[in-house]
Amino acid sequence: MYELNDRIEKASTLPSDFYQNKEAWELSKEKIFCSNWLYLGDESQLFKGLENVYPLWILEKYLDEPVFLSKLEEGIKCYSNVCTHRGFLLVHHPSKVKRIICQYHGRKFGLDGQFEFMPEFKEAENFPRPCDNLPELPLGKWRQFLFTSLQPNFDFSTLVNRLEERLHFLPIEDYRFAPEYSKTYNVHAHWALYCDNYLEGFHIPFVHQSLGAILDYGKYTTEIYDQMVLQIGYSDGEGLCFDLPEGHPDFGKNVTAYYYWLFPNFMLNFYTWGVQLNIVKPVTAEFCKVEFLYYIHNQEAFELMQGDRLAEKTEREDEFVVEMVQRGLRSRFYKDGRFSPKREKGVHYFHQLIAEHLS
Image (tube, rainbow, N blue to C red; front, side, top):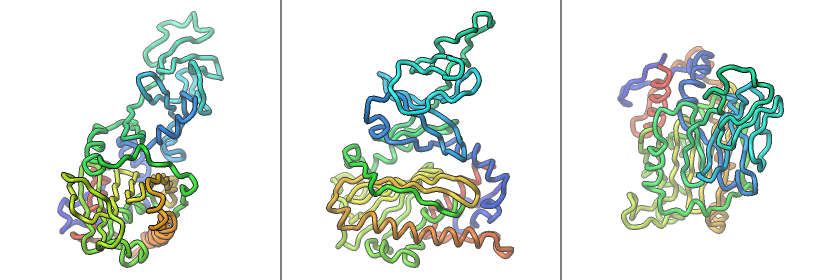
């Protein structure tokens, strides 16, 4: 459907058609979002009480796929939340149960998703079948964070290994989830435009004066990995920096921020005070929701950097930019643009992945 030159020096961006084409929007559901790892939640938050089942929607109002997490002795598992009899939703609330019982016709399943019993089915031939069990989805876990995929096209360990390469020294499991700062933003733009903007620091001097004040723009770097982009923000030596251990890839450097993006819609923003998760959730071709989740490691550093206020200001500035682009893409005079080989490697890679998935 779309082609992109592998060489950024010669490549043009995805055409404006991608952000407006109904066929591309629908194809993206199956080709992009179903075949990649999507964030489900924080195990320590989902199962912080006595509950052993937890219902979730995978990208509600977009993929709209109902699943539930089941806490078993061998660990957390993920299953379809749809009864294999007539499609009734099984788990409606986080709860502690001995088995899953459909409230429509009484079909019973074990917490491992296996069919156990169905009333009034004695005369049914060739029953039960393997398809009467609940389908299990693969579950990926990094630290306390859980991911799943409807049809994964690569192993989750690829992402884990790359994240641990630089973040292994951080006690992320001990970070405090801070709901008082967390919030969801409504952005009137295509989900991919939000990612386009996130994946380059090129706009920082022009759009983000406050953020730019803590970053050395000249040293800002972008690294490309399989299904992942890492942007590294450096300090001029006066700001708060990570205390990196010997042997770390960036040992001896004044790193003030690590910005990880996992294809297609998940971001991790690490500062000395902790981490902020961003999850971009498509709703329509002109509207998405962006969830900000805060985990605090050092409250003093968070307040010193004005973590929530800086993020709020930066987000509002980003919203203004992507919403203006959303409107600009409707112009009869714009088709596509060129990439800055120095500053837009992340956007180029993102567009490559989209083109590959939709081809």
